[in-house]
Length: 572
Image 1 (cartoon, one colour):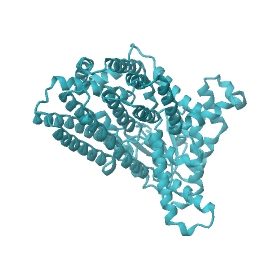
Image 2 (tube, rainbow, N blue to C red):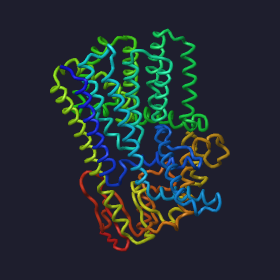
Image 3 (cartoon, one colour):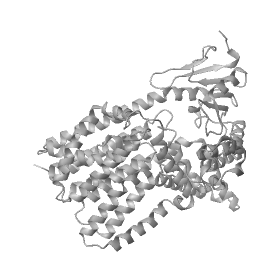
């Protein structure tokens, strides 16, 4: 016998367990360097430096709602600081200096700000998922029979790819959870009104501004809503007015479409172009991604039930038109994704969210959940799979970062102002002294660097890079948003340098290539500089046979690092 009450209790318990796990791995016991990826800092710094008039970084994500969250966190923090120091102000300059000093504190404590953002993101995702499963549980739509409803709740609740991203400050968690809510609203709402249609479209625009890749799913959202409104005898004119109002809302959510149009176009279209044409593919589809996907047994298991679910979805849903629109957009997105030569799991999250609906129908019609103990067992199995995926992922990340974290900890024991050359992995993780900051500040502002970057972006012959006036001036409006942001950060770091008493280091960073990088050396140049005695220490992933390392970091799971000291150089 089915029990909505028991399903509600089970689903809330599972949700609380997954939220606790997310809090543990994201806040209580985060990775060794706190961030899962250095990309996490993009959102925080983009939000904070909106105060300085800087365009956010990485608009191809675009994570604008998350950027605004960071902005408001900084606003609250600054407001609190102003309130506690209100008696010390004598002029407007004193107030503005507080903003500067808080930004300076952020630059030296980025990881703390990431933790603040995680609190907000975990709460928001938990709330959105709660509202999603509550809608399904209490839905009376004829397209959902009880057994499908129960399994759909458990599948949506225990989507491992979603929970893997919840503690990570990137676009995936918020965009995926909101898009899942939108799908459920469209597919299982009995009657749509212009007000509810605007609500759904508005949320979809929130999703787009969080992750622009969802633009590829706009046919399903807009055509489905048009069909539903038509069924309710609502005129096309009212629908077009609804779209117009929604577009205005989109500009409010992402004003950079107007203020930085070319930046948005460069970021999104450039990102799509790179992913499609990154490397020549030997096959029609990206077989390396497909092979990695099918190597996971659970992926095969859920894919089988998704295929089965297509039949039941079409058979049981009361609107065949919506089903066909859904499936058409689903397979279009799958086809275009698998044609990309550069493809990561984060790129296929929208497709995974849509697949949850099909999996729910497949499992719900094959596995008969006709007793409460079966519902509980199914919930426990799905929760176990998701929990295992989260534990495994975090164990791997901690293992991957262990050597880097140990090397950073060792470097921070060195004397102040020590001269070091490090792999690019360390950039942003080591405190830089004034000489290093001034050098990077000048390199970031260098005309030669910026002209060469423009030359690269515009695919022009090398000789055109000799004169910046030979290039379109408008190109400078979309090419240097990162450099403008860095320029502000360097100015703040240099102006308030003496207010933080910590050991800092004169560091040069190196990588295999330094294309479009302002202050990164090519690896061999750094090695030559070390051989010439320019650096006291060299920290590298290379085990150099001509030197004797003074320190090694070689735990299994991640990159190993060797440390060499110039004065102990031994040539074999």
